[in-house]
Image (cartoon, rainbow, N blue to C red; front, side, top):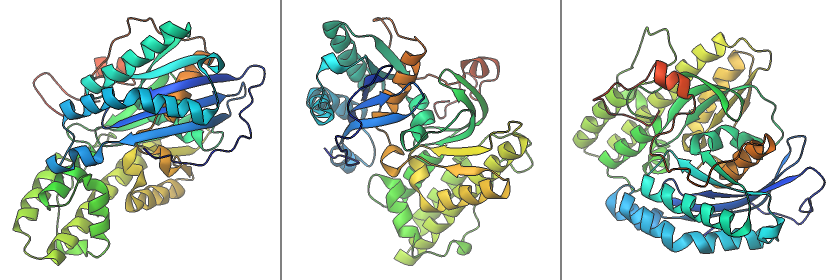
Length: 373
């Protein structure tokens, strides 16, 4: 377990109107718990954030094994939560609610955190808030500083790639999404083809530092399309085939650089369309999710925002990848609106942020496979 930031005792004392929420996150391969305090004017203070990573458990398999992940969550959730409460300096009587990820994600893992949250809420007489994991990412930039709604969001992670207009929790409109694979999935699968370790994204980024991507001409998807959708399956397939033909370390480094550049280019191109179409006065572009930690991707998106006259904001690095502080904050913002969940809230492997768009204009038709949109 590690602690992504240092927390002083300053600001721990609640004042009138503050909401203090315990957040639980178990949607993939991190068991995480956090306590966040939200003031009436929207300022979030992270009192604790504990994350237990399962990277070592899954490294031998080159990816996350759902059954192993779920078992690890069962073993770790109580201890991780106890440590988060201890670091926050609070007992359960100091909480106003308990928020838990209810999806989307690996449903076995989601069930562990949600069930623990339900049990704690029942035992302590606290409201339960079932949180969409993606909504947690959407509000994560607000953990580092006060950020006003609305803003344009690029959510780019291992399983998700979406552009959204974010007006607040429970109020988001999908502008574009991947029609097949997510950017993070492409990073990981190509890294695996290159023989890199798990997790693949950071390993590919490190390898690309010594590469010259100009050697490889990779396909560009959706050229000429007027919408803001993404596609990474063609890139993933082409690069994986090239990876098997690489003979030297330099070949692999060059291909890694080409892949990283191609992914960043597509993200920048589709974001550029959304930024140009933005009608609001509040010109803020937020990038969240694990892929936002990639330096090349971040630099490309920062430049895209600047060209369009937008301020650029990404969460602190500790909150780019999966964590429970973002779940606690989303839960606190929902609780602030009086929105709570029934104790029979279900774990959901699929849960779109903009359900109206998902129903009226699904990115994936019956019979097609792809990212969780």
